[in-house]
Image (tube, rainbow, N blue to C red; front, side, top):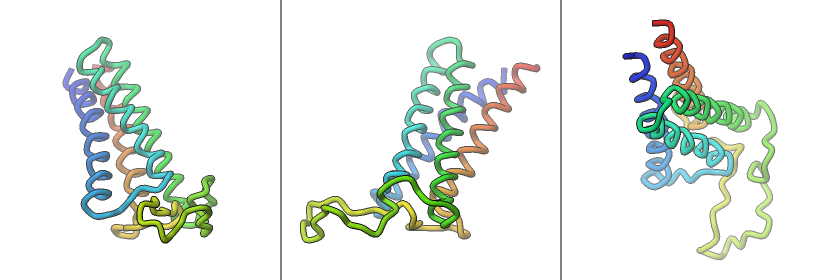
Length: 153
């Protein structure tokens, strides 16, 4: 039973912490998200919803498992995004371009162009997308392992 509770709590805490960090980096440190950054946030929002359902509605294993898969999905998107930032492969969006397009750079209300292929911040050479890949993928796999451990006990 302890593995199940740990899995459910981790499924709630991990996306909450990663989304909290994303919003702190955005609103406190001015690191605005690009399109691919948003792609990483959506599965975390879903994971939060699944994790909350797992705390309230049976069967908790189903909801916790779905939360774990959503967290892993965010991690895989982060891995793809990190690869674009490091120049390992091309991105698939228009935000990895040098063209400004129809944005009027003289308009102070225009949204800033945030490029997907440039890491705005790194720690130990790892971008935010890279850190999301590491934390989300390992965290999601840990949740699944805790669930399997509880099933075998």
